[in-house]
Length: 155
Image (cartoon, rainbow, N blue to C red):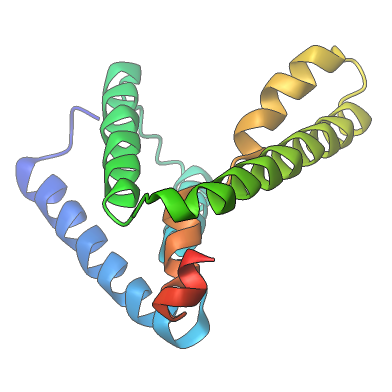
């Protein structure tokens, strides 16, 4: 990591911004969320760099900082689109209950798959590992419903 110059880092960040813009165009055409395309690109680039013998070590504190800032930005961006009114409270309650049931079922399902795949791992660890995989981020959901009308997005 110490061999990376400022220009290399700047080009990499600019390249990611351009790639993100291109993926947002692909999103409009294919309805595949751009965040999933970016995740796939990151996994692919890691695979390529490992196969070429290039090893990048990112400090854990930087990963934690960027992850926290990214999560805050996603939550705040999603909160800007919310319109809470008294007549929508039953809809919000049903939506919350539905999301909770789907979250519990998917967490147990993913934990079961993990336990089947890694039988030596305690089931509670499998459940803990499954929880982040069972949460659907607003970064995936919001672009997916962006093309719907305002009435359909609200219901």
